[in-house]
Image (cartoon, rainbow, N blue to C red; front, side, top):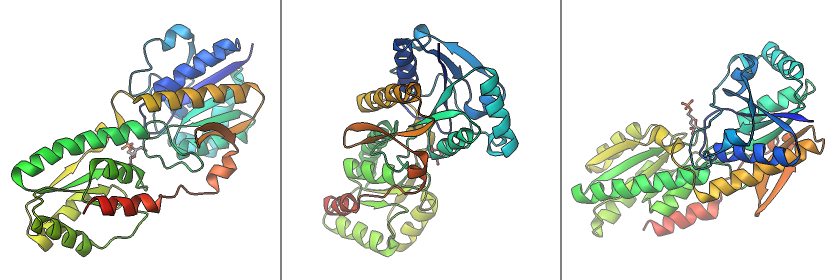
Length: 319
Ligand code: F6P
């Protein structure tokens, strides 16, 4: 009976539980045993192994977070740590590991493949910054969370006739800011991928106030600058009553959307197939509605670009 492991690593993302559930169910179909590794690569170093059966993934598809917990491991980043991790897997008789996480977790997984461990990566991060996949698990939920927050902020912004600078997550990428800005009607969207002129942002703010708009939301991706610094500067340049809201980790929690549950289920179920077919390293991707497996090297060789046309559309819609 083949024995496979599954772990979640890096920042948790809504839908990770749906992915774990799909791994266990698909493995059951193939009569493969599943070992859950708690606390990501850190738990792998500590041999935090738990046997998983269908019962262990009952009632989790609707929950954010990850039942396997997650962690960021400094020890696993070292060559010694990676040797130790591979040895722990071999000792436990594990044939391959499904790593659910972001690009950093993929790099950890790829390191394990050089030590003779089969690893399949499943893209799980709210940031949507993994190349070669249109969407990562958790991104859709995070965008909806930001839009919901923007709706609420807009109410108070209108009541007090204020401008709000709202900071969203995304690490070095602006995908969350762009999509939430489009859906939430942000007056300006500041993302690391596209240079901006703060004077221009201020001019637009004044112009929309002159035409009678009493509320504004400037959405800032965390990779651009601190929203506090931007808010302060805008206040100085426009004299507008400006407030700042940093949404922070609430973007990582909550029940996953149907889209994220289905995405996670499809990617993870296929990851099990790929692993049991004998593939020793691959990154699962979702492209144009299809699930595919590609080499890690292909993911590492490219970057995830912003769709410039969406950015331009957001500017039109913000007028
Ligand atoms: O990668 C997900 C993410 O939430 C990023 O958007 C953010 O920059 C980072 O993780 C925060 O990490 P931590 O929870 O370790 O502070």
